[in-house]
Image (tube, rainbow, N blue to C red; front, top):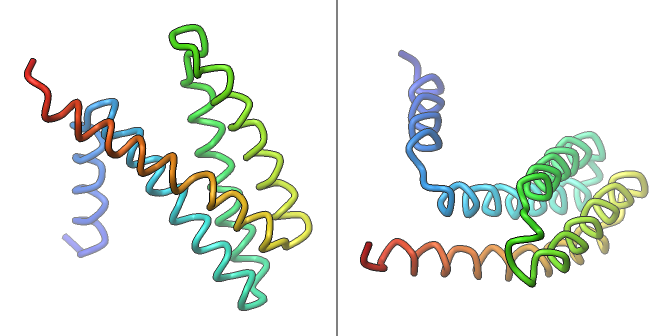
Length: 128
């Protein structure tokens, strides 16, 4: 089995056995990575690569938004609105090749990722 196939199998196993909290953190980690890669690509003038990264980031935000249950907690509607804003910014960053919009998204996504990571770690350490 090739190294790429082993890595793909490992990632598939990791996702299949992850808790919902871990999956959320994984999505945010990948979203942050997509934004970093898009910024790097735009800085290098590689609009095609930036497009790929920004579109993947949009897919992640759509997934996050579709799985959000706004009726379960008071912050749900605000998070839904934030996801809507992120989608709009990602689309515009892609259309215009705008690194400032990517940076604005990073400034929102990274603290959210860190907060979800801390919450997941807290839940993992809590007694059942």
